[in-house]
Amino acid sequence: MAHTYEELKGMTVAQLREIAQGVQSDAVQGYSTMHKDHLLPALCKALGIEAHVHHVAALAAKTEVKKQIRALKAKRDEMVKAHDHKNLTDVRHQIRSLKRKLRKAAR
Image 1 (tube, rainbow, N blue to C red):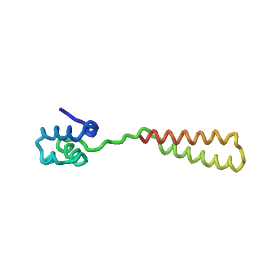
Image 2 (cartoon, rainbow, N blue to C red):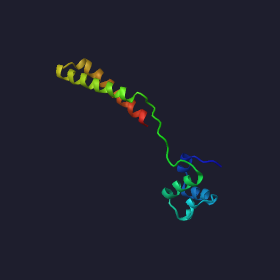
Image 3 (cartoon, rainbow, N blue to C red):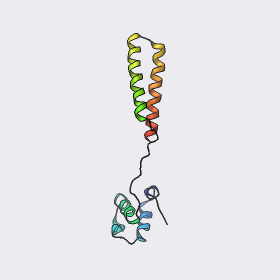
Image 4 (cartoon, rainbow, N blue to C red):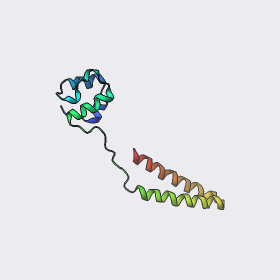
């Protein structure tokens, strides 16, 4: 049965030990006394699974969004000096929404 890293990571130590019992490899030797943090990488090595999850960037134009944020911050500072409170709230909202967009993309 083929396993994925995420599937193995969600299992309990007892379940991982059952899987290790059926695997013939030097990497899982002594599986009955291993803790999960040692057993999981050993099982991944024995089964030929990559032992980490690849992060996929969801936002391709990250630098462009950061440039927009910087420009809006400069605009915000000018509005604070000019006491333009009507437009200031709009600019602050735009900055906040762009920052949220960046944080969502990083997850």
